[in-house]
Length: 211
Ligand SMILES: Nc1ncnc2c1ncn2[C@@H]1O[C@H](COP(=O)(O)OP(=O)(O)OP(=O)(O)O)[C@@H](O)[C@H]1O
Ligand SMILES: [Mg+2]
Image 1 (cartoon, rainbow, N blue to C red):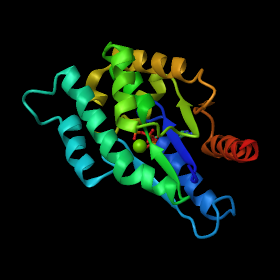
Image 2 (image 1 turned 30 degrees about the horizontal axis):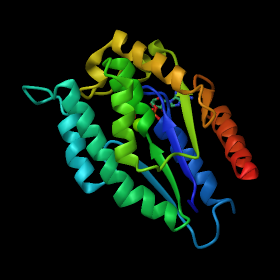
Image 3 (image 1 turned 120 degrees about the horizontal axis):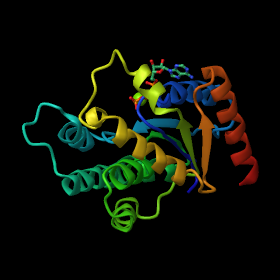
Image 4 (image 1 turned 135 degrees about the horizontal axis):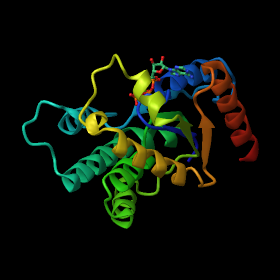
């Protein structure tokens, strides 16, 4: 692909939105993105119009009967397929860059490690949904569970965020395992925001040098 695809992963409240905002401000001011190309910021679930409807099916707390875990997995896969085909692939083909708030790693961590669904089944669905589109780099923003809870104290939790401490702890273990992959970069995210963004910037510069 001509463009670069950057993903941020991490448990709730780990600072993904904060760092994505910082990174995009910085990137727009540099000449790292080729002239005539742009940066697209997106997220999962809900990066497309169809995906927004899927997001509310997944995360609303108001439904009497929540989706069962396989239904949940299939909804995430459907959201991802639409996202890849409508936004991510066409953007990268133009040479534009994409930053996504969550991608396949979240499904492996939440539905695989959190809900104990079969990892191979999840990977098969991932292959169907992504059709070979993969991030150039995935940043894992790593914070302890206690810090996640503390940072979200004044927020209304969505359906997944309401799952509680043990679930979140399994999800976090999942992210740790995934971050062993060479295309992932784990960053301790309990530091000051400025320190975190400077590590992210240097990883992006490294990525461009190595390609
Ligand atoms: N390095 C940091 N140190 C202290 N607080 C931070 C740091 N980064 C972000 N925060 C604060 O933590 C809260 C959660 O951050 P943010 O919304 O960026 O996380 P998130 O990963 O996007 O969360 P979610 O998964 O719920 O969307 C915010 O109030 C934010 O200001
Ligand atoms: Mg966020």
